[in-house]
Length: 463
Image (cartoon, rainbow, N blue to C red; front, side, top):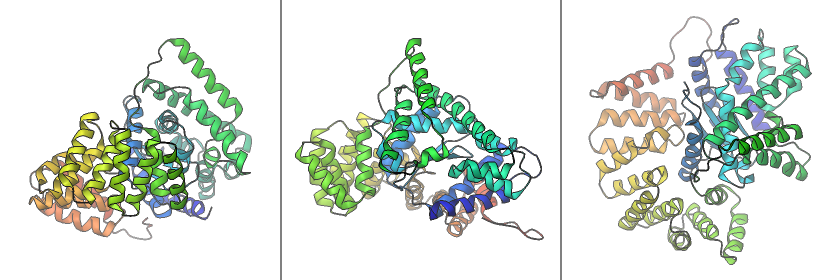
């Protein structure tokens, strides 16, 4: 709760500083700038998951849905927050946050896609912007109430700040939820996921969590759900099946493996160890993987190799397991074996971003810098949520004497890590040295324009 209040206060000041004056609508550029500010503020208040397997997987599921939204001005990005609470939310500019806790409650990739699709629906409908514009906010108090209502699920507070009446605020919120459901359901179906996952996930959130606690799940605080809404979603499923348009596509990855990676990398270590040992007794392949991941977390590289090899023998065609085994091999200096394993993983799934990233690390260790750069460049669009890609690109380019681009990517890394001082330093050096990439030079100037405060007369608030 303390963290939630910190985030709320920071968001209030952000909105006060950036909200358009008068009744002017919030533009797309306003949303993008606001989204960047909010990401930085949330990073200061919440721990983020930085595991490459998890981040690339969630982004790949998210991008499969984004491919169904049609023409969009947004560049969608998906972040995972390391908190056990069941929550997810979207902020301006196409930025979606999902908590570890809600992923651990799920039973399939389809359910993950249902939550991400719903959040995509909020963004495409511009609910955040519409909430601000349509409320005709005229005071800081009203603005604070609206933000509380949107982010912390406090409709009573929102109503009190808006003078529109509590019932009207709740109805407005339900309209938003229905629109996000409709859009998200459409994305889910077009992406080839099981449409039944959306009502199933909502029912889980409604019943499972509060049977164990008197507290309403965090996700339902900001996304009010009722039995009526679950029934409505089930009706959508019936209509979808009756249409004859139901098409299934294979999942992006093995959801259970990724869920195991979350438990091994971010859960309580003793509980995780007991869980995996119990699973191993039952012959569960993901339990061997989990134990290997736990050993990696504890930097027991050789033990990790042993367990991950067992997992790979039981699940030889899983690129996530192969990729993690290769990482353990790299840690023990077995570079050629790691390279061969990663090439096998990419033969199974050429789109595996984490396998390509780890192959780049192996190639760098082998002195093959140009090949490493080629692989990193192919996945650099994931860098805003997985900044290590930019860092490794900066290092590799520096070692091949491409100093301008090296400083540019290191600047991007520090920018996404919210280290403004280091980012400014790197971007200034990049600006002086970039000669053969006009697009990178323009981006460098844009970053510097944002990061270096302009001198203004009177009072100004920098966040």
